[in-house]
Image (tube, rainbow, N blue to C red):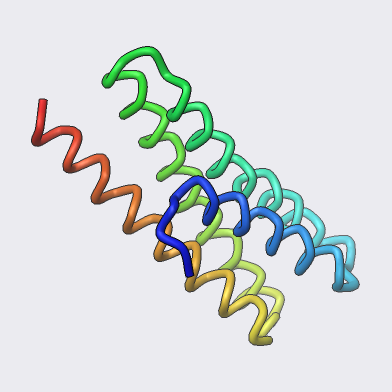
Length: 116
Protein backbone atom coordinates (compact mmCIF):
# COMPACT_ATOMS: atom_id res chain seq x y z
CA UNK A 1 0.00 0.00 0.00
CA UNK A 2 1.30 3.41 -0.93
CA UNK A 3 1.95 6.13 1.64
CA UNK A 4 0.94 8.94 -0.73
CA UNK A 5 -1.98 10.54 1.12
CA UNK A 6 -3.49 12.03 -2.03
CA UNK A 7 -3.55 8.65 -3.78
CA UNK A 8 -4.87 6.84 -0.69
CA UNK A 9 -7.69 9.35 -0.26
CA UNK A 10 -8.58 9.03 -3.94
CA UNK A 11 -8.56 5.23 -3.73
CA UNK A 12 -10.63 5.38 -0.53
CA UNK A 13 -13.26 7.45 -2.37
CA UNK A 14 -13.33 4.98 -5.27
CA UNK A 15 -13.55 1.98 -2.93
CA UNK A 16 -16.37 3.64 -1.01
CA UNK A 17 -18.32 4.41 -4.19
CA UNK A 18 -17.90 0.84 -5.47
CA UNK A 19 -18.91 -0.64 -2.12
CA UNK A 20 -22.01 1.52 -1.78
CA UNK A 21 -23.10 0.99 -5.40
CA UNK A 22 -22.81 -2.80 -5.07
CA UNK A 23 -25.41 -3.08 -2.30
CA UNK A 24 -29.17 -2.82 -2.17
CA UNK A 25 -30.21 -0.17 0.34
CA UNK A 26 -33.61 0.44 1.85
CA UNK A 27 -35.14 3.90 2.19
CA UNK A 28 -33.84 4.49 5.72
CA UNK A 29 -30.29 3.31 5.10
CA UNK A 30 -30.05 5.53 2.00
CA UNK A 31 -29.87 8.55 4.29
CA UNK A 32 -26.67 7.22 5.87
CA UNK A 33 -25.35 6.01 2.51
CA UNK A 34 -25.61 9.51 1.03
CA UNK A 35 -23.79 10.96 4.04
CA UNK A 36 -21.01 8.37 3.72
CA UNK A 37 -20.62 9.16 0.03
CA UNK A 38 -20.47 12.92 0.63
CA UNK A 39 -18.04 12.81 3.55
CA UNK A 40 -15.77 10.11 2.06
CA UNK A 41 -15.23 12.10 -1.12
CA UNK A 42 -14.67 15.28 0.88
CA UNK A 43 -11.56 13.77 2.51
CA UNK A 44 -9.68 13.47 -0.77
CA UNK A 45 -11.07 16.68 -2.21
CA UNK A 46 -9.66 18.66 0.72
CA UNK A 47 -6.29 16.92 0.53
CA UNK A 48 -6.09 17.88 -3.16
CA UNK A 49 -7.04 21.46 -2.28
CA UNK A 50 -4.31 21.50 0.37
CA UNK A 51 -1.70 20.47 -2.17
CA UNK A 52 -2.61 23.54 -4.21
CA UNK A 53 -2.84 25.99 -1.32
CA UNK A 54 -0.97 29.26 -1.32
CA UNK A 55 0.23 29.23 2.29
CA UNK A 56 1.16 26.88 5.10
CA UNK A 57 -1.83 28.08 7.12
CA UNK A 58 -4.19 27.38 4.24
CA UNK A 59 -2.59 23.95 3.75
CA UNK A 60 -3.13 23.12 7.42
CA UNK A 61 -6.74 24.32 7.28
CA UNK A 62 -7.56 22.01 4.34
CA UNK A 63 -5.98 19.09 6.19
CA UNK A 64 -8.09 19.94 9.24
CA UNK A 65 -11.22 19.88 7.09
CA UNK A 66 -10.11 16.55 5.55
CA UNK A 67 -9.64 15.13 9.06
CA UNK A 68 -13.12 16.26 10.09
CA UNK A 69 -14.56 14.66 6.96
CA UNK A 70 -12.68 11.45 7.68
CA UNK A 71 -14.02 11.35 11.23
CA UNK A 72 -17.53 12.02 9.92
CA UNK A 73 -17.14 9.18 7.42
CA UNK A 74 -16.16 6.80 10.23
CA UNK A 75 -19.26 7.87 12.13
CA UNK A 76 -21.60 7.17 9.19
CA UNK A 77 -19.91 3.86 8.36
CA UNK A 78 -20.42 2.80 11.98
CA UNK A 79 -24.09 3.81 11.73
CA UNK A 80 -24.43 1.53 8.69
CA UNK A 81 -22.51 -1.26 10.42
CA UNK A 82 -24.32 -1.11 13.76
CA UNK A 83 -27.67 0.56 13.08
CA UNK A 84 -28.42 -1.24 9.83
CA UNK A 85 -26.43 -4.36 10.72
CA UNK A 86 -24.12 -4.26 7.70
CA UNK A 87 -21.46 -6.67 8.95
CA UNK A 88 -19.49 -7.68 5.84
CA UNK A 89 -15.75 -7.46 5.19
CA UNK A 90 -16.18 -4.50 2.83
CA UNK A 91 -17.38 -2.16 5.53
CA UNK A 92 -14.63 -3.39 7.87
CA UNK A 93 -11.99 -2.59 5.25
CA UNK A 94 -13.45 0.87 4.63
CA UNK A 95 -13.47 1.60 8.35
CA UNK A 96 -9.87 0.42 8.69
CA UNK A 97 -8.63 2.62 5.83
CA UNK A 98 -10.67 5.58 7.05
CA UNK A 99 -9.13 5.20 10.51
CA UNK A 100 -5.63 5.05 9.03
CA UNK A 101 -6.28 8.15 6.91
CA UNK A 102 -7.51 9.99 10.01
CA UNK A 103 -4.33 9.09 11.88
CA UNK A 104 -2.11 10.24 9.00
CA UNK A 105 -3.99 13.52 8.70
CA UNK A 106 -3.91 14.12 12.46
CA UNK A 107 -0.14 13.47 12.60
CA UNK A 108 0.40 15.83 9.68
CA UNK A 109 -1.64 18.57 11.35
CA UNK A 110 0.26 18.17 14.62
CA UNK A 111 3.53 18.31 12.75
CA UNK A 112 2.46 21.48 10.93
CA UNK A 113 1.44 23.10 14.22
CA UNK A 114 4.70 22.11 15.90
CA UNK A 115 6.94 23.33 13.05
CA UNK A 116 5.51 26.83 12.67
